[in-house]
Length: 410
Image (cartoon, rainbow, N blue to C red):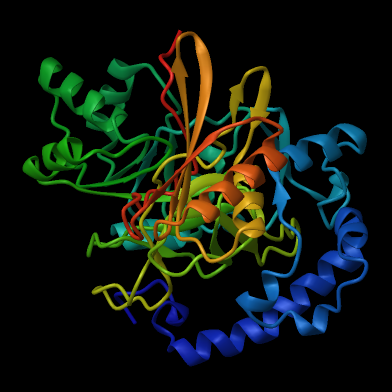
């Protein structure tokens, strides 16, 4: 098992499903007993029946807006934490502000697995360029490295010349930080004539990792891989050296749903990322991240068997203000439920003669009566008039976009 962080990564599909059938109902019951918000939200739920992703999909979605509203009404954590604040080690704040707790347990955010997949091994120094104040990113990577038995230089953000000189002196094996800042440090080192050849690995997140930057690192002989996580959930998924999608962490469950709803989509379809964490301290269930992604079929060539996702593909919260009223993906989903049997739908918001327009494109065979029903359903859902265009099945892009606002940016 030297190629894997632990034996969980190479489990069979059946073994993982059996483990889920045991752990998931326990987590739901734990949330009901110890997190007041879930005691309310799940008061009519039989936890013992939630033994699969299909059963999980019957539970309500928890959205960031609800976290914020409940935290404002019942500080500090809105009733979603299973412990009192006095029993946590740290508290962080993300934009909103939404506050996140960190329990005093090893590798609370579970980043050791992702760092191991990048190639970091015990005893090797991590040069950690994530922020150590307010948001938990610095703590996420530091606690993961410490769980691997690695020392950490808490470099934080900025101070490029100081970063380069410290790396030249301390000889770290691995960098962690945003995708582009490592390049900035290396270029500063070149400018100053410093030897930064000890840096062989990079673990990046928190920004777009574009192909041109990947190629730049590869040409320099570095292995730089990315992960996807959030301040609420910790690690969600990570790359391995196979570089074919991002592998789901063993401590979370992934659903891809139609944006604005909790309705699961088939593998391959782009939709909103919902995550359920098996963290007993902060047991978030079906948390809508607001991010778009899709499930990749099959297992990674590296031998890790958990679900793969395509990584970050954009944002799901596509609300647009039309003629003074907000139109949201949930309303487009309402149209789909009112007129079943359609393929993908896309509401195109435009501007014509200084007036907002709405055009609903729907995948279906030509049918004038169907188009009329859709127009009526659109008006009922949005309280606004729009036109309908039926397009051939499979012709709309599989990009998760439900509302396409084409109006010029002011």
